[in-house]
Length: 197
Image 1 (cartoon, rainbow, N blue to C red):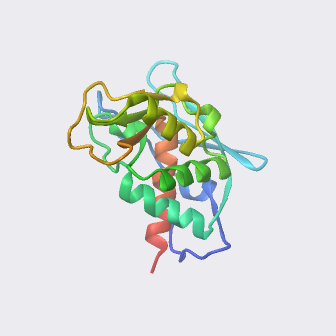
Image 2: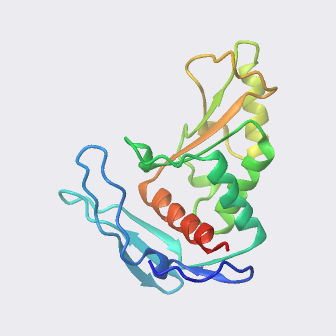
């Protein structure tokens, strides 16, 4: 990726440019990386890679992403509150964690606005609520469901209580298992942060 421009508001990110020549993160089991295949389709890009065997994970993203204050906030938030690890199997997951519902809701809003992930397509049981024994599970589920505007089948309670989770509504963890979503998001973040002078 040739990234020499300074990030400016009201400009756009072209995924064809920033993904050119990129590869997947190393596989946790083999250490292998695979070249990303980028195909232009009207205003979208189709991103894929050829996995061992006949597997070819594929995902469609909008080609152009407008740089707005909200988008810059979003990447700052997920940089601070998401997982940056690519070790073990972490590279396969897009993760955000917080006890404050407002930034979590705004993060999901941005993902929908840039057409990367709609609430409807969040996989079942991808949002974990960590809490202590003093919390009421039904109240927590109702709170987070309403605050994030996500259906209850997307949530699950952490299997064990954590007595360190003393905040009123526990801690919410969003885990999206999606190799290409994580890879593309990381490249956009790199473009943005490298371009801030």
